[in-house]
Image (cartoon, rainbow, N blue to C red; front, side, top):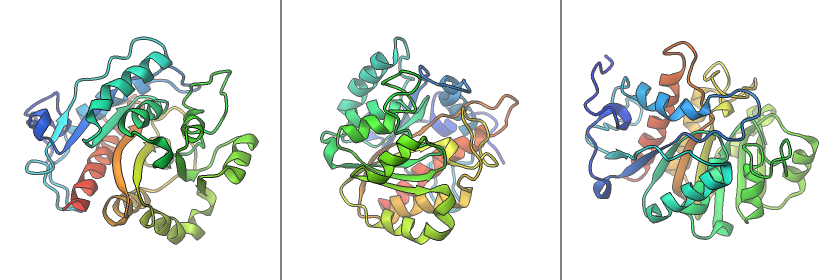
Length: 294
């Protein structure tokens, strides 16, 4: 039975929040939308996910995590989204930098925010692996003349020394394909190959070591699961595949996942649409992380 009246309508899942210092995880709404190039509406994503989360049960039957007990989740106020994209990225970087010892799950917003988050949460970008679940490679040097864009964000992180492990890619230019194929520190599991490479992918996740940042563009999922995103593409991940990735990365790998985001969600035009699915994805990420830390 869904929750009819949330205890605290400013908090993820509607649960009364612990104070900031005693929280096990932080949720940061980042309604930033500055460079989207097709469908719009990602600025409304964080609020839609939070509002839909009030209707989720706090108990997760798969992990047996009960959010009413643990993990203790504190939802931060929405980030100020005034200014251009560079201003927003700098503001985001400076905002999360004091939170480097905390696990921050950010709700976007467009995918460009991942750059500010990684730069703010991780001191040495040359020692981090970004696990990217996405339909698009986001390796363009420029998109529509923009250096900073949702379509260039992984290129910018890679140029800073990050290693990339890309999952579910099925839309990219020839130049991006060449970069993914020949560039060092990039491993790409294309959507059309996942059936044959699934075991290899899970093994690659298990073998990860050191610092990891997880970014989930919801268009990495098949549109049958989440159609409400700016640039949906067919042949995406199933819900079960997404859960396998989260389970392996967050409970079985050797890596330390320092932060994560869920981005590029557009509120469904007719309520409730897939808003609860996006909220469930965020809750599952937190649940698997909690299970992996026990």
